[in-house]
Image (cartoon, rainbow, N blue to C red):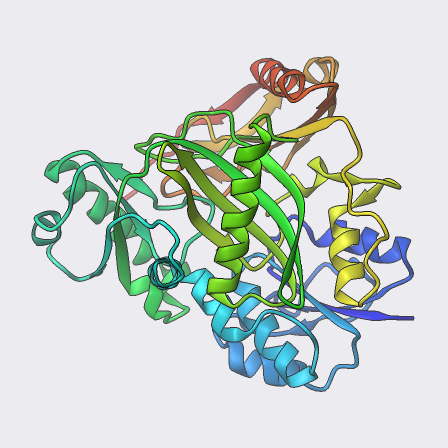
Length: 412
């Protein structure tokens, strides 16, 4: 039986999906996680406890495992996986490439060196005076934490006053104990860059020893213009002309080479405008959350299966998406407060084209909207004859959901 080393975060939505994918193909899974000793064990096997904030020590703890491939889920585990792969002699992205993917400033430097279009940008230390930093900015601009994902802490500023407010807001996010515990230098600075006009897209890919195979291109039909950049709907295949999609792919290939990514899944984000394709970022991992359920390949193969089989050197014969069109809505947090319930789920499930609705928020869970928040209420999945049909189904189903959220009380 081939075995996979799966490096996954405690709260990752995808662990069960990977477990199911492994069972379908008779693949054994060794789980390495930051969970404590009291944990749920979906594989019926003892997990290896590691600390993501100590990637080198974690990799040492994994150096003796006997596995045939390695998969990382979410951004933080990729640092551990890259170091462990080196020690185990397994193909994966290098530690330097993974580090560049997690550092928005370094990524911009590498893209510029490779001749890719990049916005004017600079980095500011977290303890700087935001008023001084605002004097160096051009408006509109975007302020970003260097190492956070899912648009957390990303804020557009149109003038100096908004810049100072955004800077202070990001500083408060990065001062939270959950982030400070990593002692990561990339969380001690803020990226400032010119705002890029245009429409946003995503590309899901698989790299085999440096060569990119494109799995899907997603349209993001909602305008992402700020002040925050909450992603909601992904729909594939893209409705863009073939020439534009070709430009997406070629720009991603250049970005992959610039970063030095070598082997494994990637998730790329980009914008397009009259000046061309602007690569926003590339992550050395598959698409996050439960969004992978929006993708099915010929033979009813899931993305998790594709990633696992690729990791052990046995990728599926076909990487062609099952037609015709599909998509997902990441249900945004409607308001800050404490989640109680959601009604209208069954009515929403009856929406033509809707495949499923999964509510991941739990009763009593605090809900925090972007830019401070880092999670969604749940996911809506849909399929249809055309991408426009899928988008309509997702919006219609979401409109039928009603959320009960209690206001939080600030107790001092």
